[in-house]
Image (cartoon, rainbow, N blue to C red):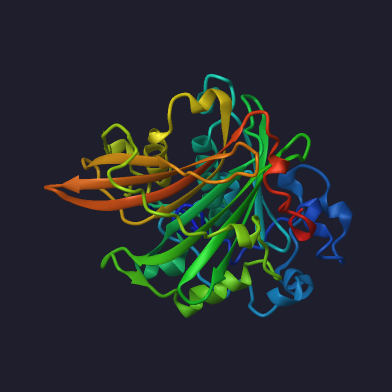
Length: 383
């Protein structure tokens, strides 16, 4: 269950070319943070835009980001690293504390109703998280956009929890704009957030948040975030803290599925094609297994509004997994919302290991999302 955190949603970090010694190209949105830059320098094709000097960036950056020079950390200047401009079309925002990228929805990313699914959205979140890392410090020939500090120490970020909430799913041909940022949470963990908008109208389509811990790839044990990496995360994080979802609605405990399970999904085999660039079964694959326990009739009358997933342990290609589920019996204040619990486990010789625990929330198609969560993320600094 790994990916990019710094890069950060995918279970890990970011990459590294010469980004730490190369000042970023500023967009029009960023210009307000650096008042002495001439607006005329930001006109014309992107390839011709003048780049501000490191000294200008350092002098005019927000106060909390002046403490560390841009070349204080190594980058992937060796080992075949590529320039971020050759790889991603996104842009860094808000003094390099966030990243934004647009994606066009392809036909193969949609279901029979021409709308995307939570699997498409989750894959896009991972892609943008990885590209955020590439924009900060480039990419290497293997793995996700892993930060050079972490590469040297055999460390990656792995996801422990992801929560995705959608008001409306984009359709075939739509363009979506995804903004993401990350921040450290104490000495052991970090989080990554996303906001998903319609690129044409600015309509908020959804939001997501995730939690990450650091893993040593050689010992397979959890590790504290090294001081140097934590300082880097803090330097590149928003100040003050930003949330994409109301904190009171996140990280709620997911109950166990009572056995014997009410719903038994099909047994499935983890395939080699399910592996990601870190050599792990990808996060989205686990999500797909979990939702196999949703009754067939749900899709026609309900829309998946939210999914919360806790990653407990990993499986390997060739392992057989089973999906179990149960419907939560609860009061929904007349909204008609339905919730399910999900369990994905791997059993071998009578010994079962929990891989994933999840909770999905489904709203009737006639119920508008604003009736489910009055608190709208993105108010104020998130817009």
